[in-house]
Length: 304
View 1 (cartoon, one colour):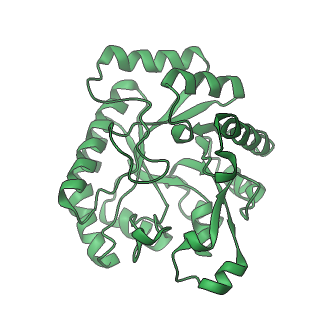
View 2: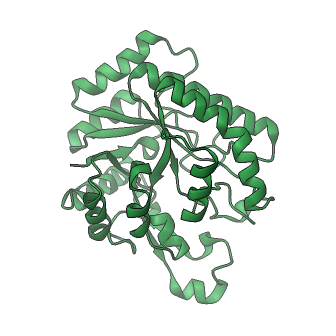
């Protein structure tokens, strides 16, 4: 049976303990814990730090794991979603260094999972980005292998807003590219954090890839989106998607979660499946946020 969980990014002002307490009270089995470096966020839902690696001791690591366990909640992954292939070499280095550090911490905590982005230089072609991917990610994956940590790459295109044009900030958005990634770095420690809303945004199947990449799905996100056809008619699909779509709670958009959960069951997926709340209609205040989380929990619980 899948472990229904929560991505902690939607609770940026809560402490680690408050997030875990709330997850336990709501009924979640696990939490994907955000571990960004402290600093100013460059986009929504980024820059969230529920575990700060700065000055983190082994005693504190044990405390986090023990605290979650005492509430009946598992830490599904340590999460950080930057751009390790950024055209700005300094920004890319910051991202890579933090991912490396997260791998170490994830191993020491016994979590053994890091969820992140491959990244992308949006000004370069897919082929050029794949070349850079090999250079940047081979040592990261090698380190993960040595530490016994799996890396779940989210399949988000990171192509939503005007500043992310023309090519988006995450390479790993389609099955074609996943095949190339896994051929170029053939490691069993490299897999996917699969979110069905991203293929849906692209007009692609979110069912077939589950079968095709069954052994590469390490972690799952439950998020929905609504595509507004009148806006597509006005702006076209080649415009940036923020003009014609909105993230929604599961069940309030176009993803068929009954079908999606059915295929996850077909492949005997029993790992973490974390609800990712990014619905602006439920962000007016903390009560609204929690209402959205709890509504999502009730909706997804019926399929698990």
